[in-house]
Image (cartoon, rainbow, N blue to C red; front, side, top):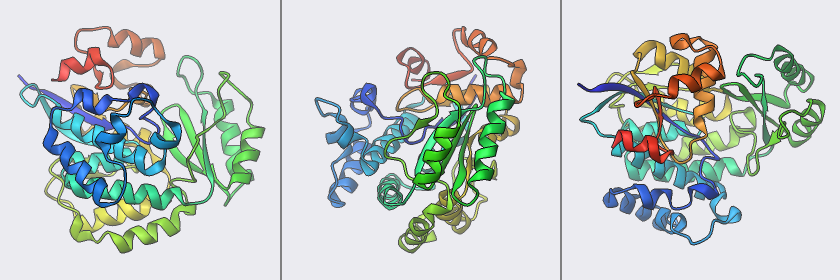
Length: 339
């Protein structure tokens, strides 16, 4: 009997040195890759195959906005298509930040060629935007809420109102973005923790804030609603709104995709929580590249005590089974369970 599954797609920063070769090593659908490569060639950009098959990872090449976006979108859609549909019934799809575009590709709202062109366009438009983005934990080592850290984050948002914004609610982490001066001041004011945070995200502008308004305006002019299709799967967006399959307005999807989620906060935690509550999947499948999304997913589940999960230890213990609840395609031993 088939298992029901929610598919979740990662955002920017998920293709790194460890992921070099991920697409060529894991994708048997050469026709899909050919579509992606053709679009990139027509745009005068390096193809997905060329980038993924390079002998050496280059930060200046692979982390360049439009290259990273193409790799992440291609990996996510290819992973989704490789899920064994005889074993798993995908009941809904969502994503984090840029993962929203991948989710649109998985759900058929964007055909492969259109999706590749859109993520390449949006990466170039938003990368040219002002500002910066950083991440800071609002949980403790046991993935329990840290009220002091959360209060300090809110304090910075109030102090730099209009210049600093909550960009992404990402499990137990706050992703803040705004002007470079506000970001620098907030990072200096927040107490260092875990020897990493506050952590500036290199190459990131003030995503999901009003700093992206110009990019949004240009995208709306370039991408009419006619290029968006009805979803073939329910989608959960960055507000936690469900877009039903076969019953959604493509024009409204276009406006949300190119306007609201570009310029407003993206609440990944709420999206994930709404998805599990409304669709009660037997498994959560995380597409690649990378496997970094698992922590934020687990933290979002712990926040609502989903299936009795109340701590990091609970989640780790629950995963120690033959077929874990959260299955990451970026982990070879878990990927095998899905093919």
